[in-house]
Length: 238
Image (tube, rainbow, N blue to C red; front, side, top):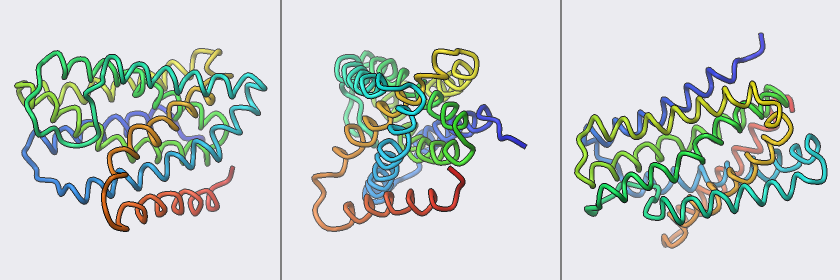
């Protein structure tokens, strides 16, 4: 039986909420452990974007695909650095204004929508690629939910509102899956858009969070993420 991309979208959205619940219930997270998760996720995301999503987008959309990949990368960059410029993956430890928390949420909505586009587009190519893309999305969903909810808490919001913020991100992922399944344009260009945004999340969102950490722990976690991707890729049918 062919797996339903919608179920995978719901699972990814649940990871957003789980991250928010972890912060809202005052669960203490090791900064070193979170950095290791982020570096591992970055390696996996960058690998799937460059090795699979980018070349497959050219196969589906043709010569225009690289331009769409670049346009998607630039668009999410402008969105996050003009609207959600204060957002970072990790727990917010300083007080911020409500405007900052809301702008970060708005800035992330396009990115999380494309998470859903990526999942649905991957499954349109093959079950194996869909599974790899889903895992790549899942890896950054928990830290993302943790980050946005902690930002809302730092702005003075209650726990319920902080969790709802993460739930909103998860909901846009589900919407991304549904829209991709029913919008023909995304059948052609969804992979290219996903490649650009996935590459941005890995290289521009996640890598800066840990690249100034001393020692070998972070580089090894990054390489481990890349290695797991190639191991998983060898085990699935692409």
